[in-house]
Length: 264
Image (cartoon, rainbow, N blue to C red; front, side, top):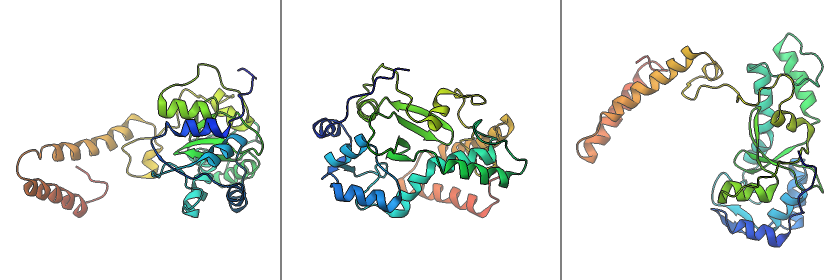
């Protein structure tokens, strides 16, 4: 990976980037507002993230964190999600970072050690949806990471590259710098991490246990239930709007009256 740092983001460049966004742009956050957010939630914006938010505050979609008037619980949840995702994989999928002390046999003990280790890693700060920037005060040029548990990939070499990639389809061909050791481990693939395979999950699961099973039987079971329901709804094709609505309501009532998850 190249070690050449990107140019610092300017207010003018940030405003140009925001013109490409599919979002409303409110007035940017003042220095006082940015400082207040950092103090309230206990993290620091990176330098380019700070400039981006000073240029304007994207809003109008839940995917954009509202650092000015958003629900504090929602913002806190977004900030904690990367760590909670790693802990989920420690508990359910056997993840263990090689730099940590040996994993204990008990899950609760393993979670306690993992949580203690994770308290020292750089905070990831949400940019848009589950895209994050490392929060390191005064630094710029971090890659933007797409984070889902320990399935972590680079979505832009830096913030500007990310915006062009996500919203304009114009990504740089240059490799990104490795800037934060702990999170870079997942991107580049350390010992025991297969970065080609995301965290296993079953998209049609109806329980948390089923969601983390990886065998074909569990996938077939969940997919089969969903498929049968879709087939029944798909058969409702003809009639007036009232007739169609009545048939859909009847199917919903059948599902609600029976066992859950549905057996047929």
